[in-house]
Amino acid sequence: MFEQLFFVEKKYDELNSKLMQPDIVSNPEEYRKLMQEYSELTPIVETYRKFISAQNNVTETEQMLNDESVEADFREMLREELPTYKENLEKFTEELKILLLPKDPNDERNVIVEIRGGAGGEEASLFAHSLYRMYTMYADSNGWKHEILSLNMTELGGFKEVCFSIEGFGAYSKLKYESGVHRVQRVPETETQGRVHTSTATVAVLPEADDNVEIEIDPKDLKIDVFRASGAGGQHINKTESAVRIVHLPTNTVVECQDERSQFKNKAKAMTVLRSRLYDAKLKEHNDKIASERRSQIGSGDRSERIRTYNFPQNRLTDHRIGLTIHRLTDIMDGNIQEIIDALATADRAEKLANQQDNYK
Image (cartoon, rainbow, N blue to C red; front, side, top):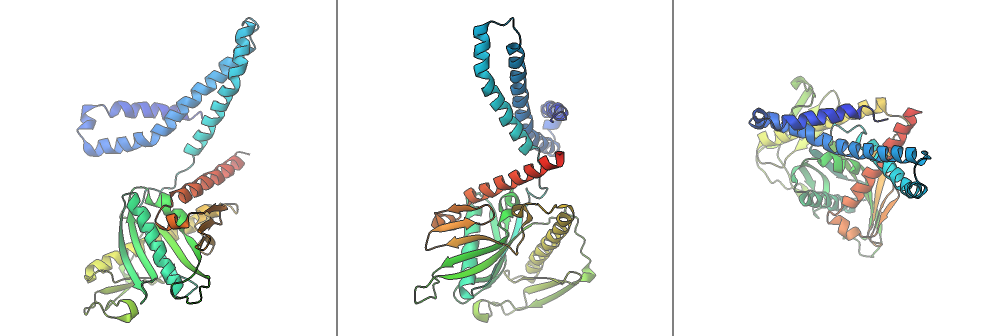
């Protein structure tokens, strides 16, 4: 099953030797490139070597058990050790399968996150603000940078919609499972009778399309308008036309940015969001072509699906995709969502492994 890993191990040893050569060490760009490749191969090769060792232990032990010249007492000891050797072999086999799963090429990218209030009026906007706070606190805990690209606030401080970037290595790999419809059940700040209301907000997580991504945008396909930025309740916060609206005519994709006082900066931010949306659409089109009907909804990022419920009276969060329930909602809303992300990633890997096994049949 892992025969090709012999050549991977050989490549790993060659990289190790190169990284010790003075001409490589003195070339920062080449050294960084080789070190990244070396680091990516390290967990695979280390696990492969453990797998080979465990495989040899099982083979040698079974051979000695079948050798009648081996003393009875020693064979009895080997019989007791064999189950442990087999358990180790199975363990390292499963670890290798996971390590060899195809990686999402976007996992290391920064992200653009878009949150919009859905059903529920003002409460939906306040919930959208709560989600923004949750994600930015999670970003802070990882040492990632975040910046608002566009914001439409309500008079009560809710977010009708907010678009923001998160910059950090592996941001997309962690946050890509957050796309979807989030539902909240709580007593709104505007509720005087103490009744629990149900509202929703949608979250879209897009891999940031940097300059290396092949997204061609013809300037002729863009309609660019400038207008005065406005704040909550329509109040003008800028007397100059610094806000920018860009429409990509072929796809009717509309992006607005009015967070900066500079029209130039707003246009640059809007173009970043536009490129990321078009890139996300391109990825979705590609995935739809190659995905089977049994593809996990965790990995699909289907934004029409209700993925999660936040029940404040019961201090409970439920992720409906994997049946995960956690009773520490207050802590989660403070950005402590790693447990959820880990559970979703584990379920995603399990689904991919199951599909991989079916492909071998």
